[in-house]
Length: 341
Image 1 (tube, rainbow, N blue to C red):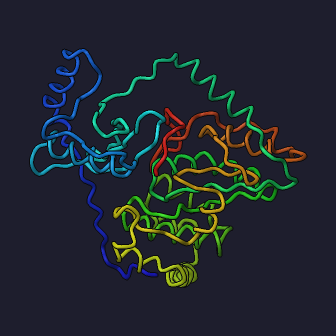
Image 2 (cartoon, rainbow, N blue to C red):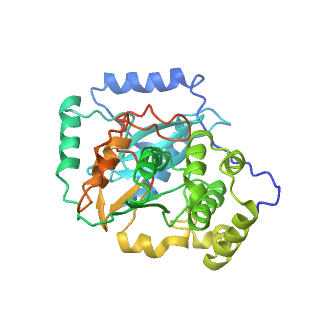
Image 3 (cartoon, one colour):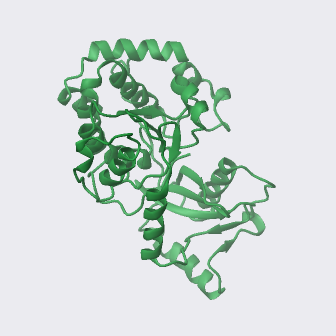
């Protein structure tokens, strides 16, 4: 499957943050004067869905933002929706920035900010304890599968944290990257999923170098060259995989899209179904889904717990810095909980 030299333009709608500063500030002031931390979407703006799905809530919230909070000619776009228990976290895109907003599950109230009413240190301690106390099945050679979307910022964050562990435990553990069975980030994700899938499948010795380059630069042509990938062999694999799983066919047929918004990507649907994958990233160790803080050391510790007899490499200490989400520097993240899906 070749892109045949055409230029693919991916338009990323966004807020003009500077021009909307006073409008957004005014909304926040009104909220404060009203003595609450939410905007009640009543009248014309009310969200009236009954028992709406997460996807429907995300669409309604973005529609509300575009109809009420931006100037003509500018818009926001939906990145992801995450179920937070009693409410949804909706990640929106503003001029290349990913900014979260929040909504109740009945679709009637939009929160511009959610405040966690616990001490930061306490929360961090609980997260670390949860990871340490997870019961991970043990094997002589652990099997690690990390499911991502190739342009999901949080999937990329997980890959950044995983790569040093892949290198450290090469030949000791079976660590592979896999792909969620639907697309959330446009046509570029269709091509990149196929590209990464085929490099790992047929030129695995080039995969680490390609991924290390891609998560930092996002320039696949540069990364193919730097990793010395056999492009002819890659194109054959991409074409064959595309035809076998009808990737392009489904992308072009909107009637097949999930919730009318997300094209299917069925290359690894069997694995998605087996492990109940619902978003990017999903981490499976020895057939069990686990939560892992997104730093190289945290990934190493989780995987080393899965050995019957951990190798000497497990005694090495890797970076404890949280990886940064999205394409760019390897470190600099402030959270390990974000996801797409």
